[in-house]
Picture 1 (cartoon, helix red, strand yellow):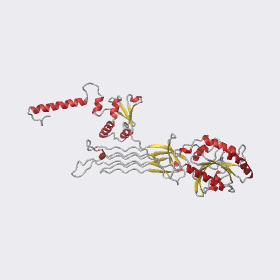
Picture 2 (spheres, one colour):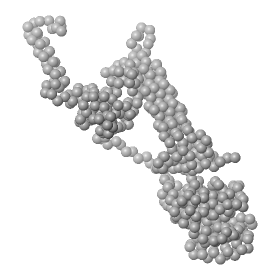
Picture 3 (cartoon, one colour):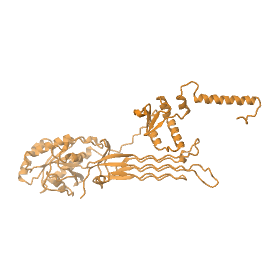
Length: 486
């Protein structure tokens, strides 16, 4: 027996990027052929895609872990590693993606809509890509970047034009079965419907969908009954139809009190939609009142008595019987008219244009803050996408790779910022979860950390060069051989 699941937590893990290759071209009579290591392949993404043939999140309930393929490692001969295949997860139309804190990430509506839940890691560069004029034959390559791992919450909100609202056993499932080809479960006991049922109704040239939501009771918006779990399936409905049981024998119940009680629950529930903010709260949707079970004489009399009361509220009222099909034709055309009016008032939104937000000219791409950890007293933390990624891609068992990392951080301005903030040689610096004992590597950094007069490495170097030049000039004037001078 299949189950209906409309809320799951998916543990998405993208693929790691492949490592770059450190290789030197070898060929007969060419002992120094140069670096030829290829790049690693990109890791696969975890992608959510809307598929209208999927109607439940049941598969994710049984298999909540999703991991994409990692990228392949680069090889010699300038051969790049293959990219990891994306893991495509099919979700129903109307799936809302949230983070674990409940913040909305995306609202997936429409066939083919997709969202990258976890981004694959970049592949590491091979030593052929790292070669430069200053480093002609790098003896190292970069490691692949780890793929993103995070949890996402998937919630299903049915995409229907008309939502049927009512107490348990009001006849909502019966109405869906006679208006459409859907065959929901029907029985003479409360809470027969445990999952939303959707049906397609054709009236003239108008085709619309109708949703039967599990029965609501007073307190549903606060968690009583099944209402809290399924009220969200009404959020996308253009029209709400109150299905009232006019033949109920329960004490204290009548059509007016039933509708008032459910209206209070609809007003207390606050939908959270990203796709169409103009929908507003459920209390603002158009209403249709359906007085059901008119085939019972007492119910027909009661329906006739309360019809003026509902009409005074400005709501269309229809007295029907799902058993004898009384009034169904008029009800169907009224629903179609309301749906057409809604569609005219809310045309499909045009595709949004991408917004380009260039990085500010003075944005360094990183920040440096003081480390609050007492174990790293006097330390600093460097935060930024690029520095953290560079640390992650470095082979720390390779001195040349560590030196390359130091050069990149210095060019980015990390070293200068540390000096300005008071860093001293040996200060603990944390980047991307790794802590180093900082030592300045550039002449400027070394000079800025010295305070004694006459100890600037640049001045010392200039003095040595000047002394050597004066010595050469003196020997030339005396006619001595300059080539043999040490």
